Amino acid sequence: MRHTVIDSSSLRAIVHLDLATKLSLFFDVVHVPRQVQTEVNKKHKFRHQLNKLYGTGLFQRCSAGNPTNVRLLMTELDEGEAESITQAQEKRADRVILDEKKARSVASNMSIQPVGVARILFRLQRDGQIEDARKLINRLKRELKFRISEDVIEEASLKIEEPI
Image 1 (cartoon, helix red, strand yellow):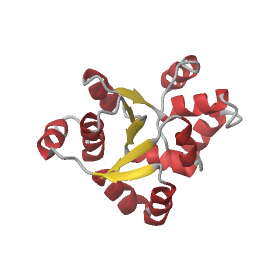
Image 2 (image 1 turned 60 degrees about the horizontal axis):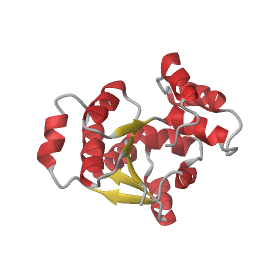
Image 3 (image 1 turned 135 degrees about the vertical axis):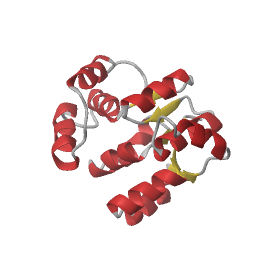
Image 4 (image 1 turned 120 degrees about the horizontal axis):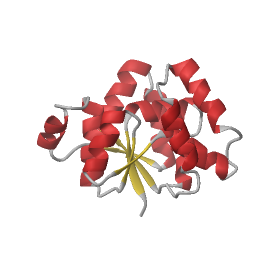
């Protein structure tokens, strides 16, 4: 079974672009940690959208079984990112969807491959699911104040043929 864990900024971006169900092309299950649920519901009034996602069967609620690991990671990361990485470890997911540079580095050091929104968008473009990944990234920057460097965008575009 292919499964992943997603953090709040990535979830918000994917939902904003109305592409959440397209994650089923890459994963059988997308786990949404408790803290991620709390963050998106509190900051973005997301509860109804989350419930619709859970209804698809692709997205599932989860919570960290080891809060000590979450607290240890919180010395470097915010709670949502820390719980996402902890959940990926506990669920034995080899991928975690997150974009923050430090969180990506921590995940990589823990042998969990980080996959960013840009990489997902470029793969969707390659597979004919969307027209223009760069255009959608610019939309996220404009509408959600999504922060992403040109280097990260370029790196994602170069990995277009690599499986997610």
